[in-house]
Length: 99
Image (cartoon, rainbow, N blue to C red; front, side):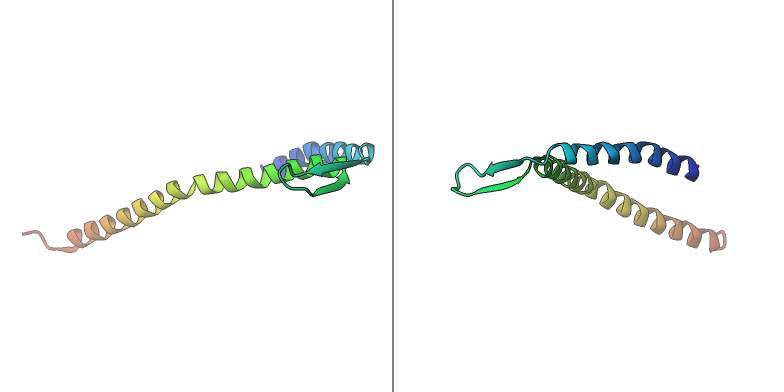
């Protein structure tokens, strides 16, 4: 199973990396980025603006997904502690002699 995942990663990742490299080579012209209310402007290559926005979106999306899981993980940890406590209580009751 691990080798299948690794093979699929190579089959998808290598062509994607080649496409990104070709995109970067083809879009080297400068692009002026202006932050509207501010008077400043930055000149960057067009590929850097596009790939940077994609990378920023990836990071923000991963952070949002991670933060959305925090509540579920906290609830799972509480339920695990509760299950452990109940298991200890059940074991203690089993060890007591019958009345």
